[in-house]
Length: 533
Image (cartoon, rainbow, N blue to C red):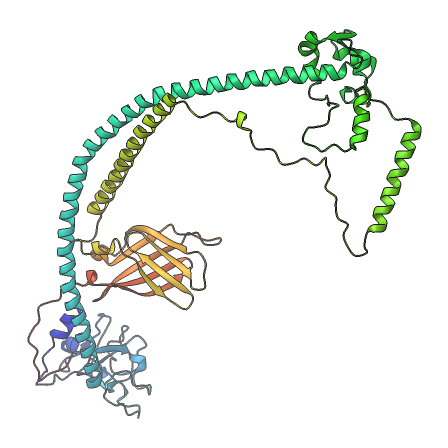
């Protein structure tokens, strides 16, 4: 259109057509001074000498095109050498030059310089530049169309090959699945048998330990070594208390013995051990703790029977005095301003020990390991083939989507499909990935904000491919989801040229691209003697 405006220049009129001031050449035939003038809206007919008499007779103001008498009148600027222009009649003779030829100020005393030729030259240069951009852009557009035709054929060929190979790969996957399942059966049976044997072994070891612990407990409880544990012997272990009063009564002890007054070793494990095993504390020190007593004391202690004795009143008082003296010594030894060092308590729970070797399941035997290796090899082959099938299916979906996508009447916008373009402003970096999404990221750091994902072509009905719509972006605070309209402008290069936010959460972006360049009209010969637009 711009090139057409540039090339189709009107001819200069060699004879000036007489017409009232402010009347355009196209309307001059309505103003015939040899007969009365009829208002252009047909509202009245007046003598012709009342045209431009500075009095408004017509409702549409058409009788005063050259004066400011009618508020709704229009004055026509001829602007020879530039573009003609209509201005409101109220601006006639207002002291401001509105027409580049100055004809609107014929009686105001204002001298207007005729700048129409200069403006015409600048307009002509601008139109020539835009026409050049259109011609070069359209040339590039034709290349883009041809490139898409070739690329589409190649993609269609590749899609056909993938679709043909998919059936073969599906059959291969199913065959490998069957082999995998077949190899996993003996593997499962062998591993289950190995697990079962190990668990049985562990259960036997645990039962043996349990019996040994019960036997040890029985020997410790049998203070008089008569081969039975009596009610009195149970009462010497207050940790077996069941009612929480800190002592074991005769009734509680008899209840622990199953109602009997005593039990022998064979019945102890079956009837008593299960009810006391969690509470019972062995009188023997743990093997991994150092002996707190001197060797001489230990020797004398070994000579005594392992029956727990209760301290006397004198011993208790002596122990309390010793504890008070030790506390006083600790307080005196503390340095002011320093935190007292906490002595490690020997009773603090240590880190749980790592599983012993006997608690770990032993390695598989040679035959079981062979079954496992064979099954693992079958699984690896199946998983590799399954991954290949998934990759192929994804490639097929992507190719089908790209081939069927609407990239314009001739596919001229297809080259944008796998590209992204950025525009940096003072605060943000805007990123447009055509047919995918639009985002905004702060320049000083932070996560990007989604300004919309691809929706549809959004141009007017006669030019649908002149705009894109991106919808359902990140929601605004107490507002709608962000969206972006991208206007496509003709240009020799592809670039985001501007981004604005005309209304809250609605963005407008302009993308320059050769794909938006229309086909220019054929060049017409230009008369070098005339430069009027």
